[in-house]
Image 1 (tube, rainbow, N blue to C red):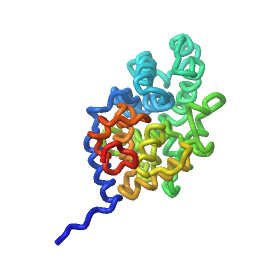
Image 2 (image 1 turned 90 degrees about the vertical axis):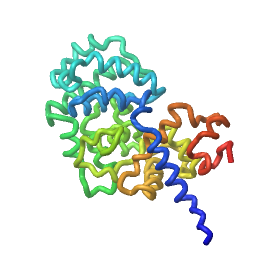
Image 3 (image 1 turned 60 degrees about the horizontal axis):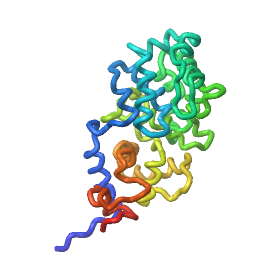
Length: 280
């Protein structure tokens, strides 16, 4: 009896599942999540996570260096530092901060927004739980309520909202860290259903998803992130965002870049499901 050749969707799922198993927490550096994993207390992880995610744009190694230095100055506890926040003291302490086009005033404004949440709600998780509605189709309305309750003037870039049409890569990344139950993510917010998360769509994911025929949109916007999540949900409806970490590793580690290299394609676990692989 001749075995039926797997249809492409089945093969792609197999390859993606293998990729997830290959890239575990041992391959995390450089990644802003490594900054969050330095802390053991959930309250510290929530605060460090939002700070790291808010500035998670640009090269991963620069993010780790710049935001790692910020968190080091908040020792021993980022949560306690902001629970007793003093704007003038923070302006002095973080004088000279720069991460690409953001400077000290932007950092202090973010600190102030988080500090207000801690004073009013006790934790970032408590605020998100107030904003969360399990009846929503996906995380977008809850995320929008969370962001709108926090951001003031000047924080529109650091705290993005689905209401703006943005892909909200960094905020969706934060939610992935807080919500997903398995490594490398923390699973702190157990009141949120992982099935409602949306893929953190950055340039790496957008490009690789296009190579895999999982993305047809040219713009990296919320619609593209939503469509990619729907495509991945066909492989794992309960946790579609679980593929994010492994796929992003391919881009961050330059294993799948804009300029394709045969030596990378030859060892890539996805080469036989990739539309433009240099190896067949």
